Image (cartoon, rainbow over all chains, first blue to last red; front, side):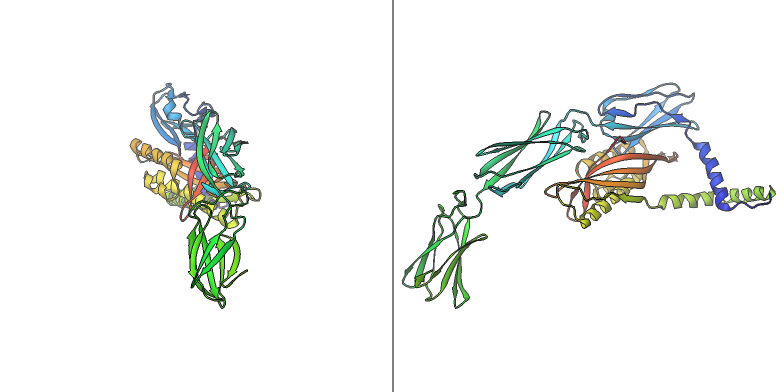
Length: 292
Length: 174
């Protein structure tokens, strides 16, 4: 019986003893789940004055408690959803309980992010919408909700539905065939948010330049520039004319579209080649002194 | 028996030191982290480097939360919280300052699952089953720490240098 006890064993033994002295003397009897904005009554027992703490990242409360009295948390005290710890400390005894405040069921606001705000027409899955659903206390509603997405395009409306998962729902939709301003709306339980998306014509379908030489100058003019659906490109869209002489750049001019056509003048170097481009679209080439 | 009594006496004379060391060791112990596979996260594809950044910054947000609550300083939240989450946590910090209370949140274990990465890459959601200790200090009087397990839903958004928590809300364990 003359065995020596190691220091770690003894320390653990004493810690357990110490812990027992400060251990909880029971659980508080309160509901495990409370809806945000509801009142909550926490009963107390014991025969000495105490203090009730309710703590969580979303709220903190401290209430004096008289023996046998209960404490009522009002709606304002339970507005932030989250996990809470209730501690009733009275003399040397501590009672505790954990409970959750969950979001109210009725949606009150949406966070709706629609992207992009401007895109070419006829883009498959080109528009995305993400919705987070909140109650009136700005708690994320984590129970599933049905979200309706509406895209009111110039050539007709499109609709999709999605169910929230952990408070978020998303969709992707095609941009329509006609340019213009589109209202993109998300709706949940009578609450809706609208974002504006501008659809612009796509890339030019064909790009062709015509040339007319007059002395030492050459006048260049494109055919009407349209996308493959026949939509005009916006005035001001830049067309780039580039003249090369003996394989080296000789002159470059950016000219804006006006009523579908871009015009410019360049020096008429004999044998030089003029090319035209708009974005990723390349047009024909023209040789000074003879067309190509 | 005498040996046991002697050992107990020797220990009792050094108990404050032993306890201090044990508490210090316990407090500084890093949380254990488990991140569930992210193969099926969508709709946007989640790159490994993005996943690592998000998890790193989310875990730092817990340290920030603890520092802000422990020091009753809402400004500390700015580092890793933004928007709704920052506003709500800052209100809690201000409220506990009024009450003369400090709270400590020491995370012990995280089981993180990234559940959503938005199509345009501007928000990412994760669910974290987390074990943590909560301790209340009321006007300097420390209450015993309580071990808590909860399931947190967090939405993070990218900022210039890091991801910040925009929504931070616990829900009942399933």
